[in-house]
Length: 189
Image (tube, rainbow, N blue to C red; front, side):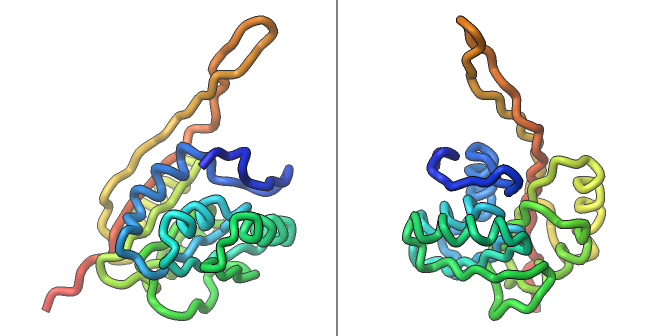
C-alpha cells in the first residue's frame, strides 16, 4: 500500500512501504489467526495485514497518545474491524497465543520484548523486527538463542525514491533499515 494512503502525524513513526512489504512477507501470515504489532505507530503494518487477511485477528499495541489517535483514525478509514487497539507499553498482558509478532520499535526494552514475544508465539510462529540502530541489531541477534528463536533471515534495506529537484530529479534516500525474521522453535517430543 502506498504510504500516502495513511493519515500521518509529524512525530508518529510509520513503517515505510518497502520495509512494510518485506516485513509482511517475512511474517508469513497466510495461515495465521493472530498477529501482534508492538509499537504500532500509525498502524500501517496492522492495517495492511488486516486488509490482506480479513480472518486475521490483529492486536496493535501503542503507548504514544498521538499515535493512538492516528491508529484509531486509520483503522476506521480502512474499515479494519479485525484490529484491536491496546493502549499501553509492551510487555503487557495479551490474550491468547500469536502466530506472528511484528516489532517496529522497542522503546528501550528490546530484550524484554523479544522474550515477551517468544512467550506469546506458538511453536513455529514468526517474529519480525525492524531497526535503524546497529546496536539494536546486535542486541537482538545476541538475544535470539536465549529466547528459543531461530534466525531465518537478516537483511539491511536501503530505499531511495525519485524526487524532483529544481528542473531535474534525484534519488532521495531513506534511512537504512535492518529486518530480522525469526521463528519460535518447534517442540519435538
